[in-house]
Length: 152
Image (tube, rainbow, N blue to C red; front, side):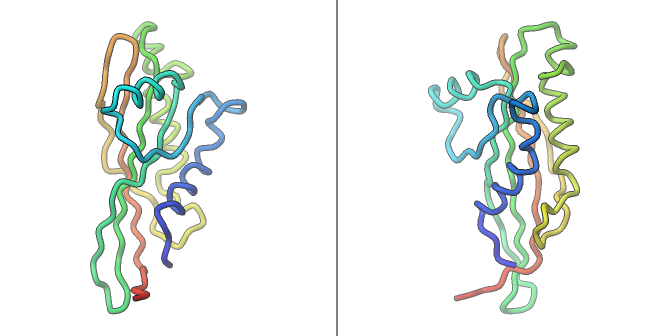
């Protein structure tokens, strides 16, 4: 089935919706297509901590049997939280980054979101930004869609 990047992003955001305020603890949960290297973008994200930004980063394709392709999509989740509390609270507290990473993993790992795709797999989780008051991790997941049809 041919899905757009928007379809994948929407499915992941819907799966994580329970983590968003008022029922959950995330202040920010949204799609992201920008670059956090820009100071203003990073500042806006940190104001909305704890938060998760979802970005469909790239896709690669392999021919299966013409006209069908296998699509491998990398989904990037930027997970951010404040870290000025004690280390245990900053990591595992109700809004700590380790807790958020764990909750995200629980909600999306191995799921297909009702789409005709393989269950979501995890690629990596790594700290990409750390300062006295904030911490941001990049969690990467892979979507594999075995049946993209060449419609050209």
